[in-house]
Amino acid sequence: MKTLKINSLKTLLILSYITLFLTNACAQTDKKSISVASSNTESVVAKPEMNINTAVVSGNLEVVKQHIKAGTDINEKDAMSGSTPLITAATFGKNDIAKALIDAGADLSIKNNDGATALHSAAFFCYVEIVQMLIDAKADKTIKNNFGATPRESVMGSFADMKPIYEMLQQQLGPMGLKINLKDIEKTRPVIAMMLQ
Image (cartoon, rainbow, N blue to C red):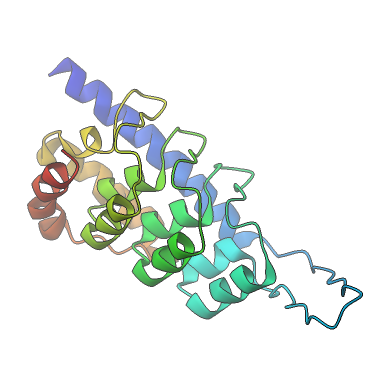
């Protein structure tokens, strides 16, 4: 029981960092990129004005695709949380964006400041489709976050103990687009755990 409470506190700390990141990502304004044309006749795709992390949080797939075409570093970590666009897509359940980033070659093993990968985030928030995409793309299921938990271990605890954390996250991140259905999460946590065996 003591270990479960410690794990719940660790998870709360992780989610607090995610909240901090998302607040920063939504408040950022993107620096205008300078496109330098090469000496040959190839056209250079201009980097969109909207920051890639903001595009991910807002679900703007077209802007994310423009960033990919423009050569934006899709593995660049956010300064506050260390989350990549893929980790953010996994946190917010942005299936199409996660697929586009995976297909574009996003690094699946990058960790944010808490040591969480995209698979940790997708598993914790019970996004079955994103978890499956990451498994299919050969994401490492054995990577441990800074608290020593694998993605599977993040969904192994009691839902009753985790429910207040999910409720807090919904309250804090709901205005940014996070949608948490507690009944679905309660049913899906064991499914995610089986997927990650």
